[in-house]
Length: 203
Image 1 (cartoon, rainbow, N blue to C red):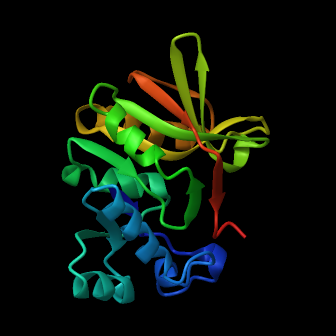
Image 2: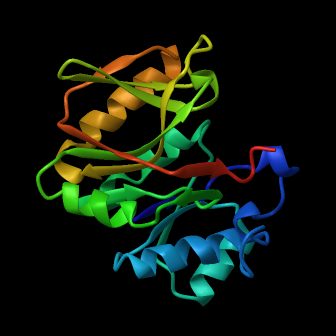
């Protein structure tokens, strides 16, 4: 399970490690809650940190949490791409500073990935210029990262993907990030409706 933690935390005043700040809903940090979810799902974590995040790296090393250190990337999509050499057969992207329900969707996504290349937990929003989105037209699926125009639709909160098709998918996502327009994906896709999804550090 991939946990991106290489961001600068600019929306929170650029703390040394926003992932270690107290979670507003649980008596633990954001990272501890993410790792607890990974353990409950019976998965292995892979935290993606930056080489200059000494506080977070020391914390992870002291607890023997599997992690890699990368150089600073412009956006989170590049962070995920930088981890491609470490992907497992089935992968789920878990953003540590988010809250969602039901948590069982993680199990459903992992189950999907036995036969489906891409599985997402989604929720409805009024403005896809603030979120990563996905839409279906017939049998075709399209992704977008922060659309260039205000548009209602489905945003994703969790992304599961098979390693074999993951590079193709994330290359398409990198392209979508640059254009902020809908980009077709070639993978087989399944969607799961989230009851709730919240970015706790959006402000």
